[in-house]
Image (cartoon, rainbow, N blue to C red; front, side, top):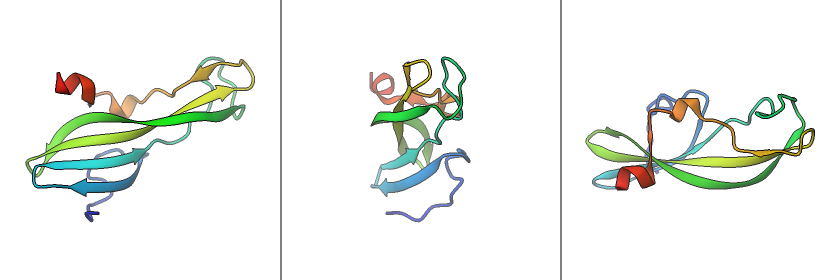
Amino acid sequence: MTELPDNILHLPQYQVLGCKSTDDEMHFQVDVPDPIACEECGVQGEFVRFGKRDVPYRDLPIHGKRVTLWVVRRRYTCRACKTTFRPQLPEIGGRIPYDTAAA
């Protein structure tokens, strides 16, 4: 693991779980804060985690190295409206999903 400043990704609400660096790449595993309310019905505190996966996003280079953010995307089920959802990530909006960047 490489020791880097906490704010190097400019994602203050996200937690960097780890960082691996090679000669030409940097990979960050990033955890997203839990949502406050259901995105469908707006009820607070009535949802439970329902699975997760790491989704890669390409970011701008750091120190001349390609950067990939591995964002832990959790899925939730709302007990009030029975909807399953993944929270929106407005802070990630400027980053490019890895499968799009690789094309």
